[in-house]
Length: 270
Image 1 (tube, rainbow, N blue to C red):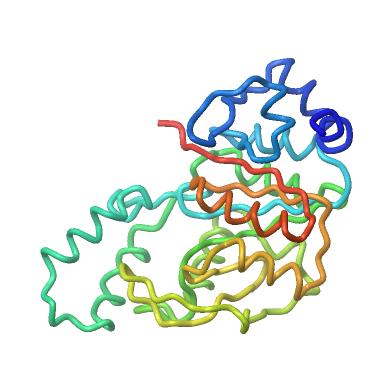
Image 2 (tube, rainbow, N blue to C red):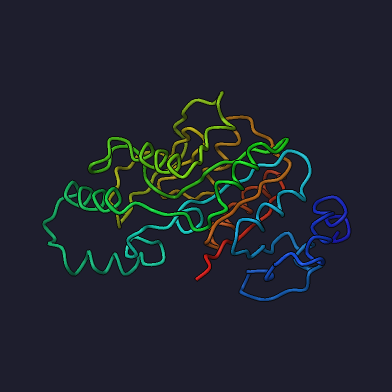
């Protein structure tokens, strides 16, 4: 089975790694595996810290490829450190201890939306605009954003997804390029989950202009519904996220649909 995967799935990745591809090993349980194990074991993760590595992984794949990027702490990070995903628990604690319990949901939304608007974000890697543009032009390859965040009206934002799109456009990134013929879509069959941190409205996940907003629903479930609705049948999905749980949620769903997955854990360089 291992030989078949190496021969048919990632034949060139073996060569790329041997000749200096900086791969730190399998992230599952934070163990380090031999190179042949990383390639052969479909349950392992490529652990990378720059987007040139991601580009090299994709370039060694064949057939129809869908590359899916997470946003926060993968593509962008907030200019205000407390809003970074890594500080989520600290943010919750501050809300609990420093803000009055009588504060309404509307007040919460105004505060946090004001933070997001005023502080903005920056890219985690200067190579991101070039890599995404290159992948979007690559034959039989599409690029998709899949973020766990809310969408729609939120505090000062009439459409939070429009704010995210405009921010990416300011970086020179347009996720709609591979999806010009696809209109917006509400994933109606999805459950919804209200965020305990940001108190977002309980809207269903949506697809809009090359971006999936899961609204805190499992990314695996949302991605599966998207692929089914748009009749996208990639030979392999490259899923890039900073959280191992999200990677395996996606892998589990794709495995059940006989779709190959390449899992990439991105860790920002300090």
